[in-house]
Amino acid sequence: MPPPFAVRRFLPLPTLSHGPGDLHTGAPGERDFGAHVDQTNYSVIVDERVVVKWLTPPVPLPHPTPEIFAHLVEAGFNDTAPPYAALTAVLDGREHLLALVTGYLPQARDGWEWCVDEAVAGTVDFAAELGRLAADLHLALSSFPVSPGTGTAGGPLAARAEEALAQALELTGGEDGDWLATRAGAMRRELAALGTEVTTPLIRIHGDLHVGQILSWRDGYAVIDFDGNPTLTGADPYQPAARDVAQLTTSLEHVAQVAIRRRSAPPGRTAEWARRGRATLLSAYKDRLAAGHRPDLLDERLIRPFEVEQECRELIYAARHLPRWRYAPMGVLRTWYPEENFA
Image (cartoon, rainbow, N blue to C red; front, top):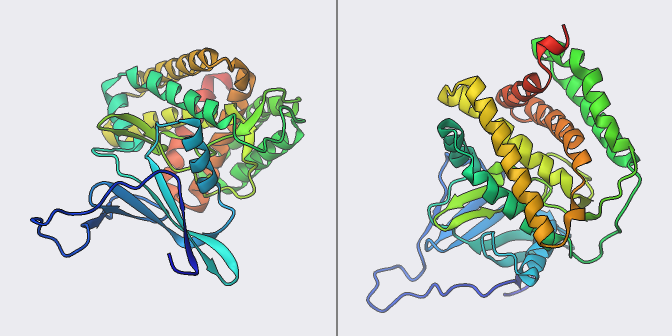
């Protein structure tokens, strides 16, 4: 690769050569995912075997994904699209990440499609697989090098959560904002648990773990996109595993709201589906951690306050980037804080 470009390899690329009888232009065929796919960057499928995700614009290094790719390969974690390479270049005197090259997963659908189907059907068998996958990911990431330690004061976590609530209250207007203000005290009381000392290990987490990051494909499920949360800057990559778990469980609640709004699923039955799915996921997650001799990775006391914080962040995201999304976190919060408890 000529300067200023460089390639960092993680796994051997599959061969993309063609036989002498093939009709081609000298290069494998390429296609994109289509305009219907919502993506921050731009991805190209090469020869139905490789995905090249071009970062638009290029991102200055350090970037979390190349280091996580390298570690997951070393740890033997395979429930992801095979990480092949990262393309970098020196731009304006600083190294930037240009593209990530991963394997293409045939018949892949993200969770905002396949999981909504599960909600409409009322089936939760998938949740055990998601719990196992999340636990295996955390077991692999728990050995990430240069870990800052196994405990920290809870103050920074509480301050971050309180700030999220304050921003959600400020940015959510109209009837939803009025309703949210009446629940702020109850939400703040649940967030208070983050102010105590955190004794669970801090590990390198995914940072944006929701069902949209989990593909259902021909051979099972795969977690993708280790870029971190694009709407949150300055987040510590080392946090309690409960942060990822809470985002994953709340995303099941969001799926339920999507099924109600877009597929006319019955609200009561769909809420019960979300409850059963959460319980199945958490049970499988804890069983897998125990089998890996690391039950200490999860402090269940942190799940609920992280869930409340996550809904605040969903409201912030809706206000700043996608206003039509507000119905999902508001629907979840109305389920958690029903009118009869505040009459």
